Length: 257
Image (cartoon, rainbow, N blue to C red):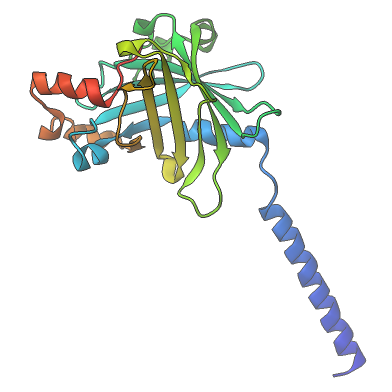
């Protein structure tokens, strides 16, 4: 090989190395704090169902509908989402309504995203918020005025490579005050998985540390549910005798206002 050919080969090799380095830099470009918050907010949004889990373990889990949608944005960029939970067969009657505020974790904390839940001043005004035309719903400025007391906060960290989850985390040590069904405090765990699947585990404990509400076998698993799934809402899985239903409600999930 002549000197000219070797020189050209060296130039091509150098260009390839430079191009590869630039591509790698682009692919590994660091995600900003607000990027993390946006990903979590987008993953929380939408209609999801615990149908598969309820079919696997009907004695421990109900078929719930999870519905979340954007409601407002704070001046600092924090996303405010409206959330409601209902039995899949009666979506128009949510038993749990919240505002979620999603934003980057404070810099002093070792986490990526902070998800806080807040009570709503007048829950009746917000029933089926996500299903209604926007001109028939409270507007963003009204939403901000209807954010009531703080309930819980979960600090999420990006999951390590190879895990099923994208983000996971829990409440700060000690949990948060809660008095439902004899509880003294409650804890929350949240995991954002790929394909917009959400795992959530809320539990209440009395002063002695005994669990008094919440699922006991593990978190609820909510998977994205298309609108067509409503055709299945009247399946036998969704019906139980009243006494059995009351007993299971006590032991497996929370009707927390």
